[in-house]
Length: 396
Image (cartoon, rainbow, N blue to C red):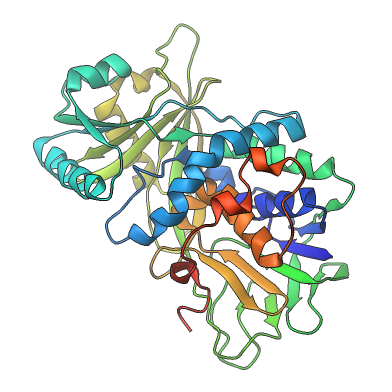
């Protein structure tokens, strides 16, 4: 069996590794692996604190995915010889004022009603866990089950793990046409690959409805052989993200992920073990790929409101990337047609759901679990979820 994965973000790379280590001949086509949303992502593995109202269906996939991330990361590190940046530690959720605290308390009640483990703590307890937090907090909560990883390191480990397998290869080219149906194929700049399955994992803004009988099209990527009614509506949701760098002798965050609400607006602060601190993220659908000056200002203002000592760090990088959003903010994950499996539209959950999406793709393709896989995130562990909410046909 040969599978061609189109797209080498965190979802495409994870799916490719899952397929390849199961013995499937796997080819990944992408001109710039991990250059899209993966490059900007903070890497919060937050099955609990990423819960939003109206996204209850996501929990059936996000919670088991988060629980399996530690073992999945360990397997990937063993296979690649590289660190993924996985770091346990939990999440602190803090409120800047009384209105923010009331909002977070309401959210915590909704989380508790679903059995999610979020406890209210005192602001003194929050500052004991993260001494750089301002003493002027209005409220605090803690979710011990959330963790983090470094998406850039994870992607590099996935590439290395794929390159170490004789049945896997990466083609650094732009896919221009994919075909499903009787003879699946992928054409790219300079060649063509015939295969048994195409796995579409192309990320933000991937598809718009064709409307002309040509099928969905995105930036020259034509999808052929699909049923005419199929719609895969994925839109780009841009976000500005900052990376700060600690300085010698300067303040150093403790390692807890901090998610805050400041005047009703969300901000997160993710400290890495290597001294990097990620601050994010804005959400805008204005179509602008550049970093917004207003977004940078807002993120710095709100982050410094919660952790004033961050002002002593260097501003090392500003970046903006498009997250792939769908109308209901749930991914399109499933079989779209014979010879075509879709894994797109993961919005802000791509890193968290990567291991689960990979296992789901492997199960959809119909490959067995790789040897020794029972010790880690086997498809039987990660995909006992109701697939209906993620059906790629649900908007058709």
